Image (cartoon, rainbow, N blue to C red; front, side):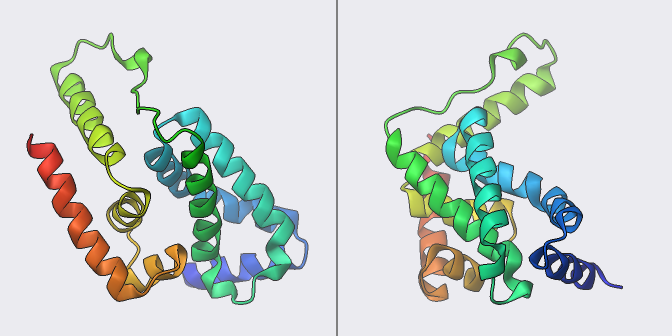
Length: 175
């Protein structure tokens, strides 16, 4: 069986009430969900909370899923909406990096942290939809038609938003 066939089989089983199948699916997408939420919210605790809320909603609403092949984009649509709501709650809050990494002496790690900090700050200056299209495209690997579906926009709009957002991000990172 191919990976997608296995995933679809697990989704079918989860829809039928198989908790082990749901757990298996969750294990496959958790890192992607967390990474998306973290970059959207800039806070690891908030990201964990939003992912947990999303998983609960997905579990409860799994029978509402009409097309099992769209499971992951359905999950990310829910996650995206939750991040949007959470972000509205603290729109003025700045992204911060973990203090536990601040005492590491290795130059390479310090440079990596500085680059991460710069990227997070630059992402934080973008509007929600601009940030979302960059994360979905660049970090999660979604194509414009999938991004459009998740963010409720036309694929051509997703492509143009991505282009403009990347230009803004590049400008911010050059400063």
